[in-house]
Length: 64
Image (spheres, one colour):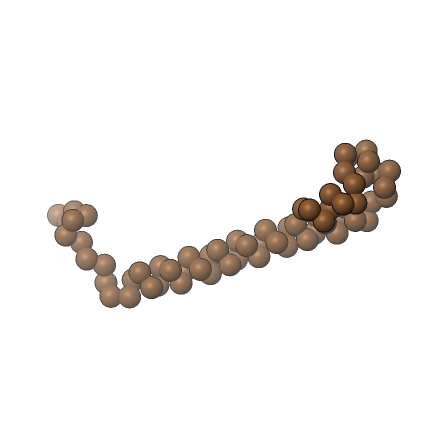
């Protein structure tokens, strides 16, 4: 039975893990950016009175 002290990772496995992590993070960051973009667009279509009702100003939209 192998334990953590005598297990050797195959050559290149660390590089593959870093590549997979890179693309996973890229996808996650793009998803977060797109969600914020959609939110900003929806909020920018509201009137000033509607924004005031939810406690926001036009300046707050840009900070999202």
